[in-house]
Each structure stands twice: as structure tokens, then as C-alpha cells.
View 1 (cartoon, rainbow, N blue to C red):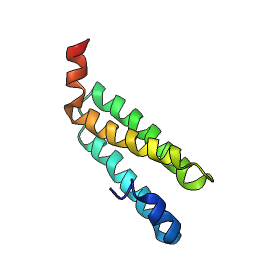
View 2 (tube, helix red, strand yellow; view 1 turned 30 degrees about the vertical axis):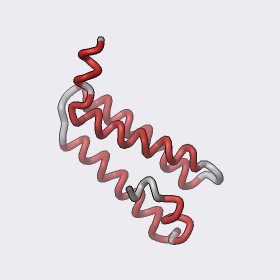
View 3 (tube, one colour; view 1 turned 45 degrees about the vertical axis):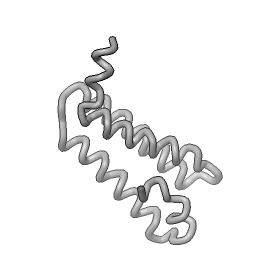
Length: 93
């Protein structure tokens, strides 16, 4: 929720807001690594890493909040994908 509310956090409290968002994104990625499940985890790490890159772009590039929100969604999807959310995808194939 803090990741999705970052514009308000970063714009009004720039000194600590950026750190808070960065730490929470790192915690999400670390959680995926701790919950390692093989090939699905590698894909989840890739999805979450792209999300973190887009979050950083959204934070530091001017007028790039669309990148920020897309990155937040990718970070969430990477986490869900690792939590066995990918099993339903394999049943479709």
C-alpha cells in the first residue's frame, strides 16, 4: 500500500519517502528469494526486478509516475507468481 501511495509520500517527505519505498521494494524481492521454489521463482525474481527498475525510474525521472505504477503492479505480480500463482498458468497450456 505504501508503494502505491508513493507520490504523496515522496512529494511531501522527499528525505525519507524515497528510502521507505526502496526498502519496501527490497523486502518484497527478498521475500521472493527466501521462498525459493525453482524455475517459477527465477521468473518471479525477473518480473519483480523489472518492477523495481520501473519504480526507481518513476521516483527519479521527472513526470514518470506511470512507470512507477506499472513497476508496483509488476512487483506485486512477481510476488503472487512465486506464491504458486503460476500453477494455474501451467494448467492452461
